[in-house]
Image 1 (tube, rainbow, N blue to C red):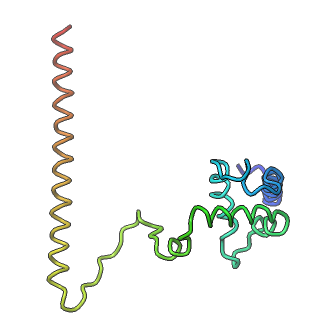
Image 2: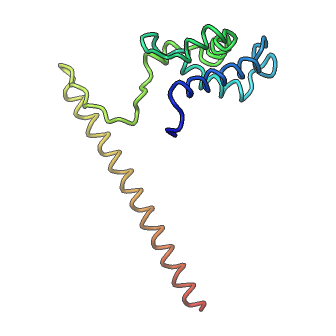
Image 3: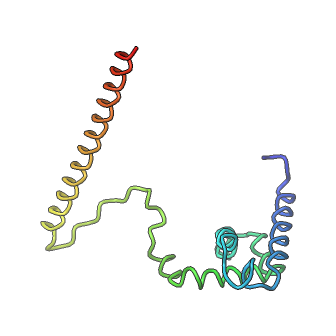
Length: 154
């Protein structure tokens, strides 16, 4: 890291894209007419280049579009085959599910229902937490018993 200049790194990327493009050649998928793991993995990487906003300056995307059109075709084939609901996924999927969300605003006339639902969810979460604590306690008890048995055996 930090050894190569940005221009060198860009050239490495272009070289890698060219190698992948040569491997794909004029085939629909890397090993013939059906996709394999290599097709899935390459789609995961190439789609990030291909679908990034055109407002972003990304020389590798532009290089792929002009010098490796077979890779662009590959991305399109994989997208159509594996993700026919691509547009819906991109617009409706929660891409940051790990981030906490603000509490939804209560709608008029349904405040009581919202409160009940929140209370139910809280009770369910509390129940799960108690079960997890019980499991941890049981594990500790088992370890203590195992240690006692080992000491007695000595």
